[in-house]
Image 1 (cartoon, rainbow, N blue to C red):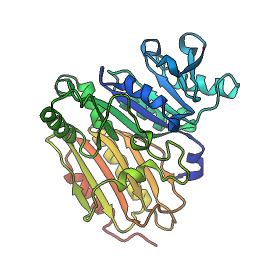
Image 2: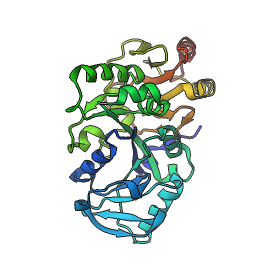
Image 3: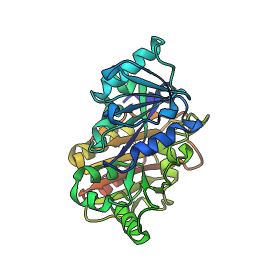
Length: 349
């Protein structure tokens, strides 16, 4: 299989998804983010744009109507309508940017509705032939209401899906919630998504450097977000390692000192995706390839994978192949056996 070159991926603009259930504080957080110097030059695609109260102190100009309506901020941020399809919204703002009707932007932040499952949006950014040519998905953030999330998680599958797919969970309204209730909520979030950090948020405050990967913010020399994510996990000392889980959601970390044959790994992962389907929530990893100086970045949402990206060199000193699977109701025993089978015979140098 041909890999995307890292240089090609670097030519794409970074994208992130800011999700969260109704009333969880997404809009408050969005307004706080738009005030931050580190977010200057961000395009924001907002669902139900006309109903979202953008802070008027930040607005410099408005143009267009309906799906073409765009609000330009004083710091170069743009807000546009996502009420139609994502591909159409993104291509409209790219076309207007190239025509000079909009200022150039450095990244895209997608804010879906409070009832939206982020999986289809993430899958579109990963595999849509139009979107994946101009954008790369760097992060999924989800706001969680410290006051009402436990009830929402119990009653609404959309809320559970949002939490399960997040890279980071942003806990809002903690100043209004009882500490004991917040502690129980943190435990529940850890069960639904064992590997997502839970970050307490104060109203009106937002530090882009804490919330987003460094590469999303344009930090020179920043590693791919998958590398940041893997490095933040507890150290992996064995070929397989479980993380906290319940009957349903679980995380399995797989590691090897030697690289697998790429074709064998690709065939195995294809079977995992087909058989796992929606039970396979997230896939992230760095996989060594025999004879190559750098690893391949692997990431996906459910059965949809981003085209594999070849890095020119290993980031940091850890050169082991590492793969993390977050699953819901999927047995890990066949996954471990399949991984072990990849290394039954040594790969050629």
